[in-house]
Structures are given as C-alpha cells and as structure tokens.
Length: 372
Ligand SMILES: Cc1cc2nc3c(=O)[nH]c(=O)nc-3n(C[C@H](O)[C@H](O)[C@H](O)COP(=O)(O)OP(=O)(O)OC[C@H]3O[C@@H](n4cnc5c(N)ncnc54)[C@H](O)[C@@H]3O)c2cc1C
Ligand code: FES
Image (cartoon, rainbow, N blue to C red; front, side, top):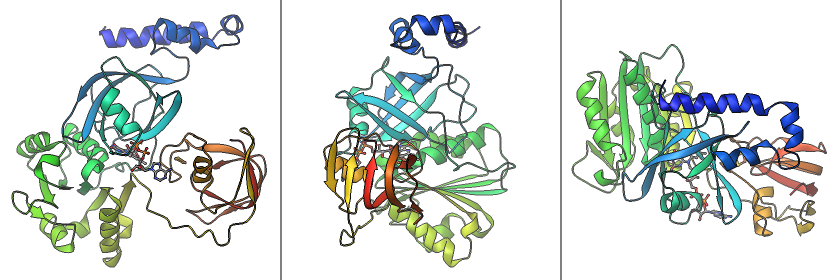
C-alpha cells in the first residue's frame, strides 16, 4: 500500500468512527472537525482539505500549486473547476480554479496554475504565501465545460493566457488515453515567455502525430506561429477544417467574444463551448434604482444604488464570500428574507421571501432584506 493510500484509508476510518452519535455528543459545541484538525489539518468529516505539496513559478506572473486533497475528494473531469478557499486576515476568501492535470494522474494530486492579478487578493496571497505544507479548502469539482463521450473526431482547443488550464487538462487527458482523432491547440500569449506550459506543449507535439500546436503572440511580432489577436485568418491557418471540429475555448473576454462572433457568423454556435474566468463588464444604470437594502445580519441599511447585492454589500464595507462573481459557482448564495430581485444574467425576477439567491448576479428591485 502506498503512503498516499495509507493516509487516505486512515482518514476514511477516522471519519467512520467519528461519525458515531457518541462522538458527536462528546465534541459539542465545537464539532468533530475542530478536534480532528488538531491531530492532522487535512482530517475532516466532510470538508475537502488539501495540502500544498509543491510550488513552482512557470512564468513571472503565475504560480503553480500541486495539492494533495484528503479522502473526501471525488476527483474531476478535464475542464471542470474547483472552488479554493483560504483565510486572509481572518476572512475566508474563495476563488475558482481549473485543475490543469490529466484526469488520469496517478498520485491523486491536482495542479492549479494561478495567474497573479497585481490588484487581486487571493492570487497574490497564494503566490506570496503558499508553501509546501499550507492547507487550503476545496469544493468538489463542478462545471459543464467538459469533453463529451464518446469524444468528437476533431477537437479544437483555443486558449489565451491563464485560460490555458482547463484546455491543458483536456489535452493531457486526451494524450493519456491515446485519443486518435485530430487535435488542434491554438494558444494566445503576450510573448513566448508568457506561455505557461511551453516546454510540455513542445514535448507533446513531438510525441503525438495527430496534435497540432499553434502559438500566437499578441505582443511579439516574430517567433510564434501567428502574431496579433484572434481573427478568421488565424483560425483558418490553425485549423482549416474548423467547421468539422468541436471547439473548447477559455481565455480573456475579448478573445472569447471574437471566437463567439466568428462561430455565429458561420452558423457553428452549437459546436462552440466556452469557459469564462471573468464576468464581462456590466454598466449599471442607477437611475431607476429605488428602495433600501437591509443587510439583516450586520444591522446595516443602504439606499439601493442599482448594483448587484454583492457589490452593494462590498460598498457598505461588508466582505461576503464570493467565487466567480458571475453566477456559476454558488459561493455567494445567501438567504433573501424579503423583497424583489432581478437576476442580471437571465432577467428573471424573484419575489419569494425566505429563499436563497446568488448575490453576485442579483439586483434589488425596491426594498430588499438579505441575510448578510
Ligand atoms: C470557472 C473559473 C475557473 C477559473 N480558473 C482559473 C485558473 O485556472 N487560473 C487562474 O489564474 N484563474 C482562474 N480563474 C479566475 C480566478 O477565479 C480569480 O478570479 C483570479 O485568480 C483573481 O482572483 P483574485 O482574488 O486574485 O482577484 P480579486 O481580488 O477577485 O480581484 C480581481 C480584480 O477585480 C478587481 N476588484 C476586486 N474587487 C473589486 C470591487 N469591489 N470593485 C471593483 N473591482 C474589484 C481587482 O482590482 C482585480 O483587478 C477562474 C475563474 C472561474 C470563474
Ligand atoms: S460568486 Fe459564484 S455564483 Fe456568485
């Protein structure tokens, strides 16, 4: 039995023993996890905790963490993401990250590559403070950005910058399972220096005949296969048969918008699958905003500015938990006590009281009371 398996089995055994009602009663009011983590910070009855086992910096503005999750982790499908939580200055912060590994990685670990936002909280914290031994919390993997089964015969992967992670996971997975269809991987970076998995891409290209790697540099005129931003010309050069491919795209909003527009022009929307890391910028008119928001848990009230409940809570100095800020990860769900809200992504109105809403995409319409 490997050391890793032994650790997981003992953790499972501990969970079974500690779920007995006797132990539950004996550990009230702190809960079992409070005592478990004193023995081993990875132990928990229900939470997925993961230990950082390796930290590397593949480019000047990214950090790659290898994580060893505890036995509560159920694994992932290539392209999915996890919610990672860390405590920063006493506040739990959650962000979404897409494992970049193959689904078939044998040691059960996962690799997250995080691009550091110079103004960002969690990405900067992880780059500066994550060390082997650091323990973070994870969610189970989630998301629909995955390859269908059986796989299409022709696959086009397009990524930009840190958007490489979910498509790298797809590429590594396809290579591991000796997929014998055609893969084209078109990747955009500022310069050659900024290509996060450059060496590995070169190695994979040598090994798999049916894989075509095309690198496009937006800020380096020479040295790449293409230069400048995504265009029809780029797409045709990279994959002349793109109309026969299923395309998986992840990258900055302008890249995603250009690809979406081109596929729409071609009538190929159904073959396009997109994963967005950041929400498009929304301009909110506060002209029609009426009423008052009551943050019931903190006893604060503010006049409705027309922005989302999350933004208005932050404007009021509160620090609610969030992950994606675009309605996909459920990190920000809070109970709405009363009032009418509109989902800015779907336009749907919700008048129900005592119900859960995603505050990152909910705008108050009149008076709203929310458990924050
Ligand atoms: C499904 C999914 C998968 C993802 N996978 C990856 C991945 O594999 N790798 C990766 O690097 N990233 C990934 N991301 C992005 C990642 O989740 C974070 O958004 C990113 O790391 C930035 O987080 P941060 O805490 O550093 O920045 P934040 O603190 O969230 O700030 C981000 C930006 O918003 C600005 N900002 C913050 N708060 C406010 C405010 N109140 N008002 C106005 N502006 C504000 C900041 O100045 C900063 O520029 C993914 C996102 C999603 C949704
Ligand atoms: S922050 Fe992800 S759903 Fe709201």
